[in-house]
Length: 333
Length: 297
Image (cartoon, rainbow over all chains, first blue to last red; front, top):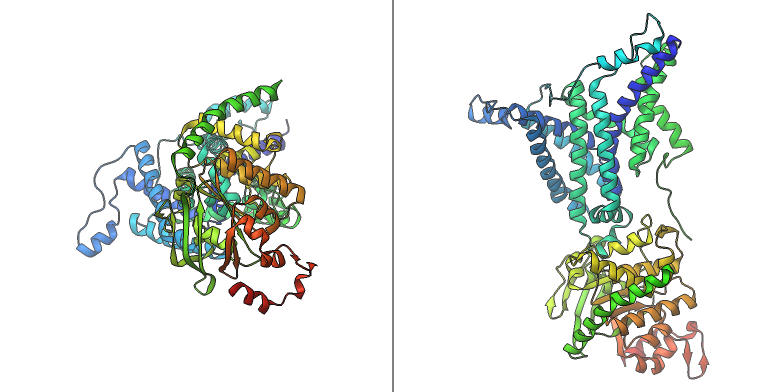
């Protein structure tokens, strides 16, 4: 095999893995958008907040320690214990459910029946609030997140793919990060569980019913508040998973919340209302931007990854506004 | 083979239910009032006064019709009862609504469904992206009596609406208007309600379908003992099927009485059925002040 093709394949594989992470963030958007028609600008910040909380629990950090120290003149930062990663994840999930309840109780319950733009503005406010709240609670320094997921290139894959080079001295086998593989597997499981939940359970059916028609769902006795808390909790869980993956990859820091912006083109590609769309969209963007960088990048001076996704999204907006898998608007006359 | 087997199972499964309903009917007096609305006032958006004191009674086991033209307040009355006003920025500011003697106007819609009052909204309001069967199953959301009972009721709904059985796997958004109305009614039945608030079932349907739907309503009323409060613009059809009627005009009840009497009433004939002693007459010829005078006298 020629070297170019081999490298191209490696880029493609890595692109797929990166795409999975985009898809994870996009998934959180889709869930909330489907069930409540709210475009949740705060999804990225939720991932950041989840990751911060997780690190805080694992390291036994004292919440609001800076505030406490400033007010009381003390100097405490840690409880001095460390909590096991798995237990911390469960605690963090509990935290996300509390958050979902509060968001519903204090923000969106008062906005039922308002225009979508007002709901959207509320999520922007929420995003900034949570960003500041996360900082206040856990500090704004960059943190290392290690829940015990395998990291680094897989030697096994490298050794077992070296023969593809057929003696080519420049080829040492495919380099694939183990974390990416784990992320892919987890994302796949997550999506399967979500699809099963929404298709085959009573709550899942109610969730889809609410997405179709709020009033009618109310009229058959579905409690909108309950469904929305549930959906925000599920989105919180997805944010947690995304936060763990990105946090493990690049540290827990503010820029984590900016990956939400990368989810926008993913959504435009896949459609705002489709779970499979979020996955396929994520993969297309991931692969597309890596391959584009690999092929066209050198000709235009590189850094195409910064804009490729958005240009692709623009093209989609022009030619297929509902995205690849977006629900066709059913309109009978 | 298969349909035969199905219908046998269906018949078996709803026999005990009919018996139970018969017992329930025997237990209480036939003229027991289930729902009582007294002198309610509804305001939208804090400024728009829509209902100006509406009172009505719905007896158990009857079909009560709420008649009137566009904007008379029929839908608002139903929504005030089912507590769906809040999400439309409306509220009941005066008067009271009681169900079985219990004040219900501060309950959530879901609680009311559990008490046995469910609304079928105007304009059908199906869940378009769910299949017909999934739509019906959402009606059973508040029930806790197990899968067996729910499946039996699903079978019963399919027996009342055989068309829905044929289309059970299609997306509700792609079914015809009549089928969507059937889905909406069937979905309400799946909650096993005592009282169904049916808003404008004839809207946008061909006369033949309207007849079909009303016959099913009548069947449900007679065989299952369901109580109906029916808002309808089609006075002619509604008065043929209902037992009692209330006529609303701009947020007030202007007349009420047994359906048979209303049918014979000269005013109703003239204003709503388009007939008068001198034969058919155009509605345009009737001056509004004359109408008002006659209502009030």
